[in-house]
Length: 91
Image 1 (spheres, helix red, strand yellow):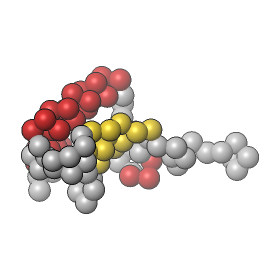
Image 2: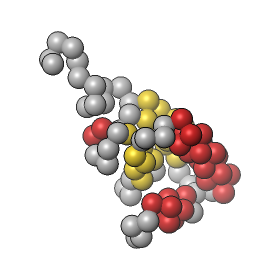
Image 3: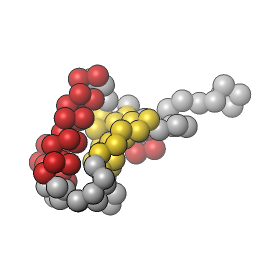
Image 4: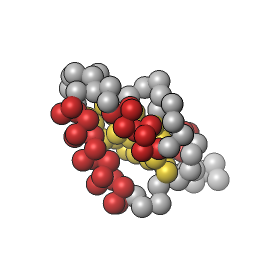
């Protein structure tokens, strides 16, 4: 797989129904506008695209989840308990 993020994302989305891929692209476009400094991660083994402050998967704070190639669609999630925020009692 290519190291170029756009090529990698296009290859990832090509595995899904065109309507699901289009919906995911629309959501990603809006997120990119809102999260200008976020790093975008495409997971190879699960249908998830994450946004976070670095390229570490453990720091992802928002997810775009795509359901099976023909199925239920696309969901947006905020990750609770991300490692980027520490609990006040443990800091």
